[in-house]
Length: 179
Image (tube, rainbow, N blue to C red; front, side):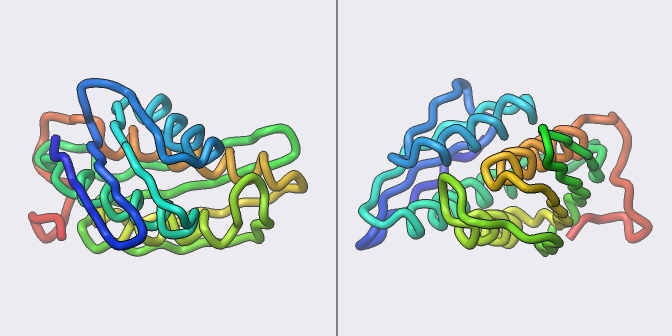
């Protein structure tokens, strides 16, 4: 578990993935709820304290810090791959995840602004992937923007839990290493 801090002229963030406790405070209530969803459904506590005047930069800097903390997880003996399909009312999200160390985000679908801007949701996942080394494919379809964003975060969390589960075996890689 690694605590990652970032202080800029616009934000201040402290984040830990796989923390001792679940504590999230970014000043953006719906974003806090989505981060809590990641924690609860991935079965890893997250500790985040963030502040800043600009919502976009807070979300971006949280993703940077959270991603760097995730990148420090011991990969030896993890499942590596995870996937999930999450339906929520009239929306559905599909997530495929590979903890390969390369950090690529691919999105299919169309998100609209909900409780936070759609571009910030996509930027969060892209920034998180680049900083964590996760490869994530995420597809979302639906009518209600709030439900679409929420099931996207839930699908990601469930896939992450699966990928990080311990198998007790060596890496699942033809190369013999992940990255």
